[in-house]
Length: 131
Image (cartoon, rainbow, N blue to C red; front, side):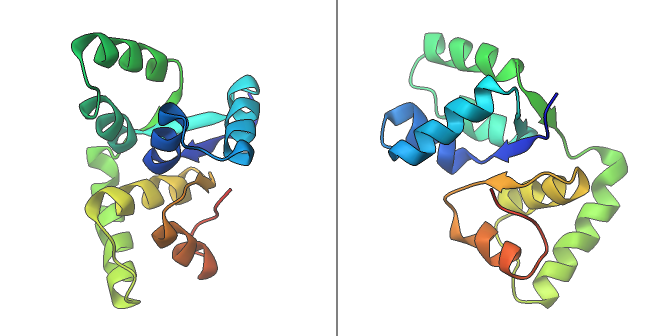
């Protein structure tokens, strides 16, 4: 399997809605074809909860099941809390959901493919990488 990229909810939403730019669509297709896409438990949650119908929910859940998924386990909770504390000390603490995605990206050495500026701020500080 190729190196993995965590695709953030913001990219998935634009991709599914057909609002993504050509470069994002091409990047997504390339990553999916290369089996290089990963998600986190929070990204899965945000996407499936946003489904419009039960049929959409089931189709989305099945599609996401084919991807590598990273989770914030109980064993990693203390490390995550310290990571978030360090972000807060730097004035960079974001939402819990985004902080957990950033933590898992850092822990698994995966860049984040995102449209969210907060992740880019972390990348500017060399905390994570963005794709």
